[in-house]
Amino acid sequence: MGDIKKYKRILITGGTSGLGRSLVNEFLANGFEVVALGRQNIPVQNKTGTYEYIQCDFSKLDTVKKVGNKLSEDGKEYSYIINNAGILSPPGFHQSENGFELSYQVNFLSHVLLTQLLLPENISKPQCIVNISSPIYVKGRIKPDQLIHEGNYHVVQAYAQSKLFMALFSEKLYLDGFSGFSFNPGTFSSGIYRMQQKWFHHMYKIAAPFMVSSDRVAKGLYRIIHAKGWSEGKMVNRKGKISALKTYDAEFKKIFWNRVDTQIENFLSGSKPVL
Image (cartoon, rainbow, N blue to C red; front, side, top):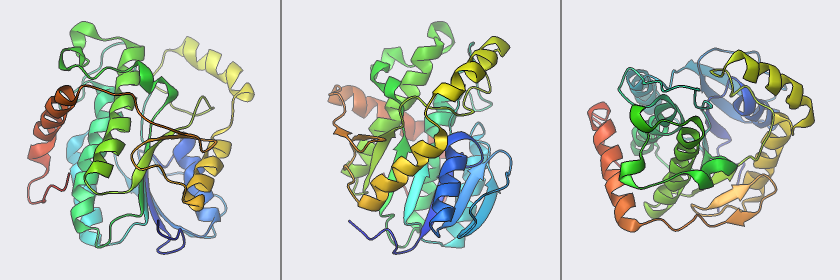
């Protein structure tokens, strides 16, 4: 494993709210050069390192492509990439302008596209790629006929499935020669509920003071990376406990990844796929 001080440059998606914002502040406090992708810029704290904000809407694959190409053209080496951007699935079915269920695209597919665009141009492989998952990923399904669409939409299953796919993405990255893991942050206070109904907002605000803070989760993830106790493609929780993913049918996974490749192939023009 590499030394955390080697490049001290990190890319964080969804870096302007919730856990992403806390991660930005944590890595800045430790002297990193932080590049944050998000929908709206925010003031940063503990600015010991350097900070760059790039606007990026993960619900639009064209925007993700433009940002990915820009980052690739910059030619910067990232020691760490944290794929964090996400939403809590909306109460009703929402389709992105690209034709995908919204949480599937924002939480998962856009990260696959961005990673594909970045890695060919990263002169040295990132020391670690972290995909933010969730404790609810175990409720997700991989069978092709259970992928979320308008006819079978359920808010919990849609979110669980997107977070399962992020966990499987870590597994695939490792099998393709990249170091990293999935991170299970547990239940904590964040702004991920923005697309929920008003009653949910009120209930969440009542419960938030009793939850673990996003700052605490960010410090936990930083300690795990700093300790270099990385689990290759497996799941790590905020206390550093490692767990293997459930076993899923290999043929279903092959079908699934072929489908993902097809979904993003038109946005990879001019880029050499690495996964």
